[in-house]
Length: 275
Length: 318
Image (cartoon, rainbow over all chains, first blue to last red; front, side):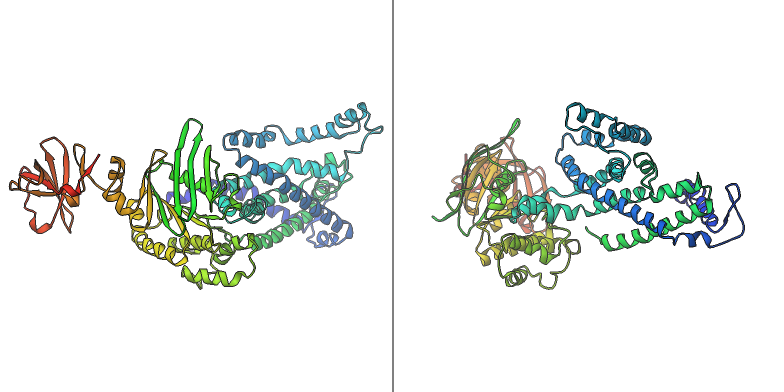
């Protein structure tokens, strides 16, 4: 065997041990029965999947998709102008890129708690607003869908900025001049040339944001206060408090299947070769 | 004279660098005009000021007798063929050509697109993407995209530089013929003297942010006003302040008529070029010159004493 073939060996080992094996376990668990004190046991059954037909779970799934979709769309809306701004600042580019990645220097958990301190009834925002007399009673900023959405957009925004930046940075600056030269005003150039050409970055960013948002459980747990149950929380609960591993596994498998199908359809439709 | 484009004392300064140092130029309507010069001489900057991508530090750009300094690129009736062509990769050939027409809200687009596709011989390829075209085809799309707008002036920034040498020669003829057919004023920027000499009605030679000389190709080649123009437009044998082109330089082993212009030297080498032989001679004054000699009459060997002769009418004196 050629030496080059061995270069992939570490990756293969990693994937088999830490992805394929756990996946196989989860798949197997999803067809087993819940053990008396947690864990799993026989016999083999389809019951876990049948339970998923309950409208309650369907609602949670729909809510999770809607939440992930909203977070993705908001990320695009915030990230695109930011990426454009960074590309247009040739000398400060690296500084701005470092700033985009700055949040990663601190743990996600710590940053989420920081949001709680900002948003809660006695938090910074409410205290200041009350002190200056804008409001009398604290605004309900924490423990609702809005707070969860805020947390998701905040957490995943860099994953949208970076791929969009990468496509914009590769774009021939003459294209923009060509558009103006042919009579396009700046807004037309933006909508007809720059946005369409940054589509690969928007797609890559959307995938990077949508999937983790769909499975998020920490943000809805902390900022939603348990009132906003998303599918990530549902899975987490089955493995922790509910001690129903087979059902948790079944939800995971369903979610994975749905994401795979959706992603495949999406990429097939959107990623026609560009250049 | 009917001037379509006029530049008056254009100056463009960048921090710590003066790219244009007072450019004045008059381009008559319908001409093929070239800006020729080495890289960094300011020719591309001049083009960008005319297109409106950059603003002059001082001086004026006039189109049709009207100052357009403060008009945006999309408000000027000029169009640019970029060196990289800058075709929109996400649009087809037809959509690229329609782009400008739609921005100008031109009514009946289809016949104009059809005519221009025919002019650049791209009929049948209108639904391809730029990535599916050859270099020559891409260039013709860039031309079509601009020409279809019938601009006052078509600006061409080194349009042939990206093509391979064979195609480049062929495109010179085609570009010139196309300009004659559409009757639009072309302003070509190039560093290739053959390109400028073969295509232009008039050309301006630029050096270090200034125009050295403007005139017809023959004028500039035969009667250059500066050493720079003489040297940039072709090889020159220098005898002090007198310049003689290699094709006007003769060498002979015998002592020539005392009446003709002549100077003695020694052959230092020969280069066989196929259609002629280049004979390298070191003059007694210490200058090196080159003469082109027909293959059949070349018996010169290094070390041979020779005389360089030329006609007084072929002299360029500075």
